[in-house]
Every structure is written in C-alpha cells, then in structure tokens.
Image 1 (cartoon, helix red, strand yellow):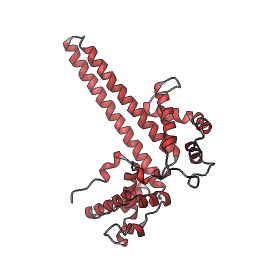
Image 2 (cartoon, rainbow, N blue to C red):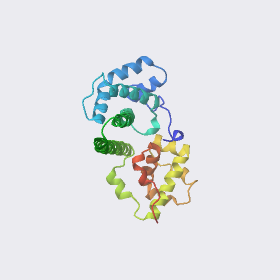
Image 3 (tube, rainbow, N blue to C red):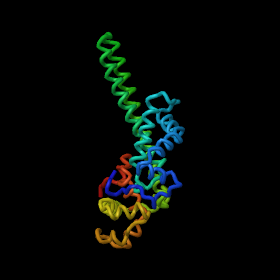
Image 4 (cartoon, one colour):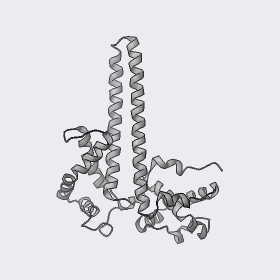
Amino acid sequence: MRATSLQPITAEAAPAFTLEGKVYEVQKGDESLRNFIINSYQPFIKKVVSKVCNRFIDHSMDEYSIGLVAFNEAMDQYQTGQGSKFLTFADMVIRRRIIDFIRKESRQAKTIYLDQTELDDEGGQDESYIQQKAAIHFYDEQCQIEERVEQIETYEQLLLDYGITFKVLSKNCPKHIDARENAKQVAKILVDNSGLAQHLTEKRQLPIKDLLQFVSCSRKTIERNRKYIIAVALIYIGGFSALQSYIEPEAL
C-alpha cells in the first residue's frame, strides 16, 4: 500500500458521531475511547475470527487474542485515503493476521512432525509424510482462496464508493489491448503522484484537468475510460495483491 497516497483521518473527513470519527479521537490519544470501542466490537471481532477459522472461537483462544490485537492495530492504521469504512478495513486486517498465524502454526506443526517421524519405521514415515505434506498444501491453498475472496469483496465495496459496480466496469473496460494498456499507464501515473492520488481518494473523482499535465493522451480518451482508470488506480492504492493480474501488462 502506498503511504504517499493515503491521508490520516481528519475531523472534517470523519464526523465525531461516526465510528470513523471515534477512531480519529483514538488516534489523537483518547485511550479510554479505544478501550470502549474494543469492548463494544468484541462480537464483531469474534465473528470475523470464527469465519476465517471456520469454527467456533471463544475468548480463551489464541486466535481471538490475535483478533483483538489486529482490531487495535486497525484503529492505529486506518486512513481515510483507503476509501473504505473502518469496519471493512478492520475486517481485512484481522483476517490477514489470523491467516498469518494459522500458516505459522502449520509450519511449526510440520517441523515437529518431521522430527517425530525419525523415531517411526521407514515405511510408515514415508506414507505419513506424504499425507501431511498434502494436507498442508491443501490448507495453504484454502487460505489463499479465502484471502483472494476477501480482497475481491473489499475491492467491490470500494468501487461502490465511487459509483462503480463490476457490471458497469465490464461495460466500460476498453475493448482493445492497447487502449487498456494506455489506461493502465494513466492510472499508474495518477497513483505515483501523491497530489493526484489524494484528489481521487478524497473527492472520489478523477482529477482529469491536472492529470492531463502528466499524460500524452487526450481529455476525450481519459473521460471515455474514466471508470476503468479509477478501478485500476484503486487496485494500486488498496494493495489488492489478488487482483495483480488485472494491472500487469498484456501481450500486444
């Protein structure tokens, strides 16, 4: 995620009566409010953790503690330039921390298992090792799928903040490869310019007039591909690794 394109929460951007406004007060140092928010959103935290783990989670489990820490981390890291509501952002942070924890636990379990197999007979060791390796590979794939789905859902919600749906995006996608590549380059130029990126994330509009100073294409071309350019720029800004293929160069 590009720090230069994201802006800290401001009082104007997040009114005090909203959750985002309360997070802003926490970032200013209101620790009592921090504790109040964490306590109030424990059911939300538990729900997210349980969904990732695909099983019931109670307060005594390590996964729940990691969810609490991740929610607290989300309050410190949340920025208005991310273009999403706080709970959407917190959900993503919690999921990533839980997935990282599960993968780490799986690697440790694999190491312990391999040490123990040295004490087993050779035939049983080979068969069990293959089963264990297959199970870990399958679990890693499931975690990646879960993370990919979550990123797509978050990205879809982010697009809605800009008045764009997947259906609208498919209709506005440039038909020719060279046109798509040009639009991707425009989006990359926009994201690399902190001022242009800030305008996009704060105003929810493409800064066409200012953008024309940095690109070689015409205003008409940018306006025609406006929604596609915004969609590509948001992939960069949001750091959606699962959507990386959509912004990589295509063969002309």
